[in-house]
Image (tube, rainbow over all chains, first blue to last red; front, top):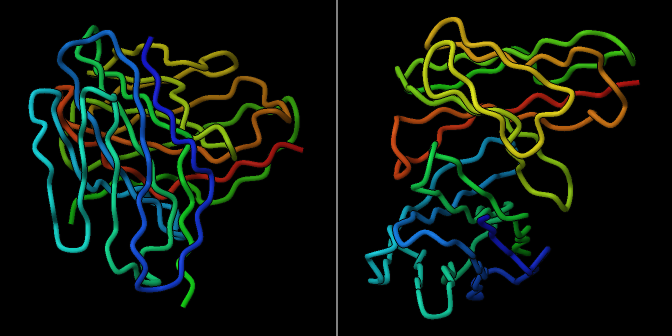
Length: 115
Length: 113
């Protein structure tokens, strides 16, 4: 069975602070994919990033960066210089390569950026 | 602009009613998904379809059924709605393959009285 744990239920930061959202996963697969999605107050989840299990390079996209560490089964997401528009629920997800393409989501981290 | 649309944003039904939630995507995606989202539980997969007329149970299929007669449309059916099915229901679609991101609809907030 696969599992995704987002231990932080809610985080509040003041605008311009950096914030890291944690994601820890469990899977028996050797090949798998990890995702982050953002759910703004409007409700529609939006894809942010995908990473496959063979690519441990960190990725940076503007103010967003992701740190994938297979040794600790973690795929953490950092927002640098947070803005009010970053306020949302963020979900980490894991995709299995076995059987059908089932995706397991974490419980989400609600980020509030205070102006 | 690619889209996943859901038939209703808000729905109120009574216990025992049969409820249909419709989802349509215009991206020619093979995969379609139904999730429910509850506070503290994240997104849980109810059913998944990888092709027309094909379906697979997710983690919580009890009390639900699905129908996929056309590629673009995936329906979730509550045969006899119960109060514990009050939730936010999210539909998503993706291209075939475990490495493809899912595109989500805006969700349907269902209340069962």
